Length: 383
Image (tube, rainbow, N blue to C red):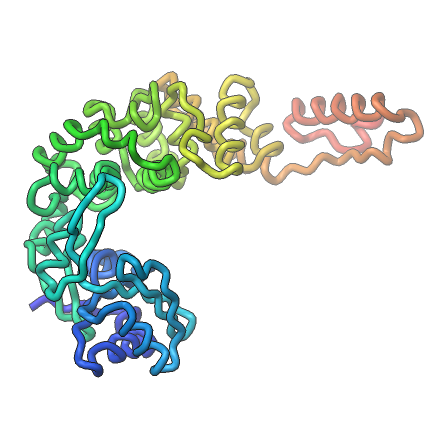
């Protein structure tokens, strides 16, 4: 018997939400990511619960228990119950009645088995009771132990229910599967065959899912498979893993944390981040990296002007694109630039320069100071 443990499941708030349902005679099961992550020893963030109680009854029980109930997705059977400041998403058992590739018309179900068969992957169809006892209706435990990602039942049918599952297939492989074992052949073939369906999805959903994939520890194999199956070109036209794979290797060698926008730039292509409805901050970050790659600034200067993260991004990208090692002193140079502070202020020059001339002189002195390796002091610069 497999049993979950951890502070998230033992907390008084979590147990009170489960008891709210079970004390009233209903089933209550933890499901999905919280069960999967707990079994893998990965931190649990969101706690999802499924039950045979209908959403209106969940709201009644929550209010009777003095808990806040929010009908976040009541048409699809979801109510968010807040206990001790923690949100718990509670969804009634469901089965799909009709699907359109982007969303499904659902009917409430009565059993865990029915609920499990409408989910995407076996590792996401794992359930646990309030005491942590795991129920595995579809063989997800063995797949999780083997780090194997499989669609539930027929992959093509699962994909046609929601084409976003194509991207989820690659994202979940990057995060949870064993690259050495390869990707599930049936799942990969179904993703390739139905790749046209991605066009029906909103750019916001695609961008959010793609971003999660790019932040995976090592998305190399998943992205390579996306390119070969034509899925990548539908999301990021012209994109290729040619520079990305060396980049991932250099990240590991340099001990630098993954950054999604750095990896997006490495894919190249003719697309723009706005096409994926990325945030304004992310769009600016991509534009800056593309500009700096060709600007010829040294690592120290980039760290001084734009910060260490950006300096590392450009340093790694530049090396990856020409397939060369990162300079051995790159880390030292970036640390030097990040710590540097220009010693001259406008007030130091205002007795001799005004207006445009003042700005020009400040820039001239700053360039001289940077060229000196940040060594020239205020007196030397003003002399």
